[in-house]
Image (cartoon, rainbow, N blue to C red; front, side):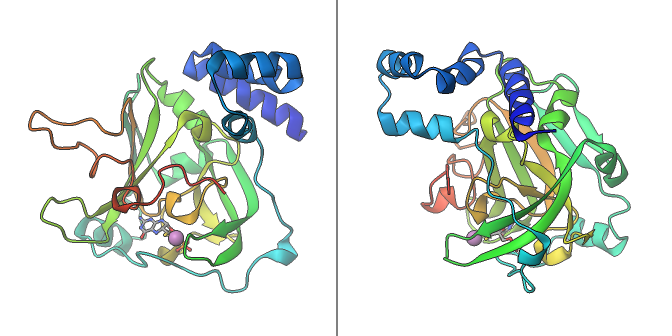
Length: 266
Ligand SMILES: Nc1nc2c(c(=O)[nH]1)N[C@H]1C(S)=C(S)[C@@H](COP(=O)(O)O)O[C@H]1N2
Ligand SMILES: [Mo]
């Protein structure tokens, strides 16, 4: 399949799932400069913001097998010190099930075998950490878009949250657990996958076994490792009756809660 066809299919899927005319119009937006200019004016978008929207459909650069880093750096948690995780690991993740819930019509519980039966994608990409290092690796995983279609998003679904097994910090407000989130544009991007293989082998523990996100248009900290649960939400800053954020500190991710950008585009 050509990149163009792939992209069109992705747009159709994203448009349908969002139930949004606006995303569907993106095709035309890029095709017709007059329409594009008109929309920019109508929406009061700056040229830069508009370029950002357009660019978000593009694919991240892909590399050849010869480019794969011999020693892909591992960062952050290298092995979760979490009872539930260690129990699953002891049995080689035979008992693992990914939960997909929140604003979906059909909540899912998927074993690794189920995930391997989902539509997949393989890609050789460069991982850029905010700390300044990069490594190139080959990833294979279930495409997130088709998985969300299977769960069927409710009309108010806006963000996909990844809850991880590991905590990076013990804090009084209990917000030390790693989590991340992306919007539906990235969720339906063809290179957004739940990876279970790295460099043609089962995903190693230090790189996020049994399942980690690859969201190739964004920096390393968005690529949640050790995914336990995927939750679809309308807002990232929702609070409980006491005004406490329901997700971390309300900024959509462990590092965004500590000052990093939520949208970490490369
Ligand atoms: N669950 C979890 N995911 C995580 C992290 C983490 O500490 N815990 N670190 C992030 C950061 S900062 C980077 S650069 C990448 C590192 O992935 P790697 O270990 O495969 O290189 O994972 C990201 N995802
Ligand atoms: Mo990172």
